[in-house]
Length: 302
Image (cartoon, rainbow, N blue to C red):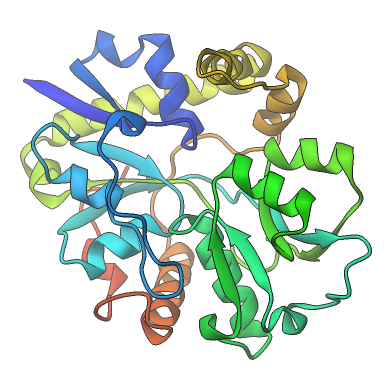
């Protein structure tokens, strides 16, 4: 049986695992690069969330297992996808934050009202901005969310076409080297921002042994990243250069050193955070229906 595993650079663990050949010793694997899949229609960040990750989890030519950030599984549940959580990383509060230029007149999240805020919409960045707005007594409709990639967000922030930006490392490092930035909202203290891995309930229930092999391979690969951060960083740099971009090996190494690796059981604290995000996303018109995140629990723990 061939197991299809989706991967892309934003889930560092799966991206490195793809390059090490560890999982192939355990399973017949078909690696599916998410960047090669036809994209869903560009979402309107004022009222939609992208559904790419869950669409291809259930599609022919897609994948059986995937790792993402905080928001995609909530979106999947809201669109009726029967997914289950497999595991989570530790907190990634050092991965990024909401920033403004040092001379900006925006002094607090409350000052974001009417401002253009750059986010990679549908990712953890949507949740960070929504939590920050809610804490400030604002709603999604009070700001102008601008959907950007990591690269485009950096350029838009430099040029001033957006007023604030949820930047992530290592891309944020390049901006900090060019201009003086000020932290408006830290991720730490706002939410834990873990990586997470999920699959369909059908796959989990019918392929428990294969799922255990994936989890074991991820743990082995993550330990390799911890022990060899510079070698791991080279995989990301090579990928960016092959696609015509530029990347700093030092910046990538620093980013990987500051991230938690390992796949842990789903915790009540994580589920409570997911539920708060789901409730806010629905209340702000970004989900088609309410979500109960504990519906996605898998009886078998990692």
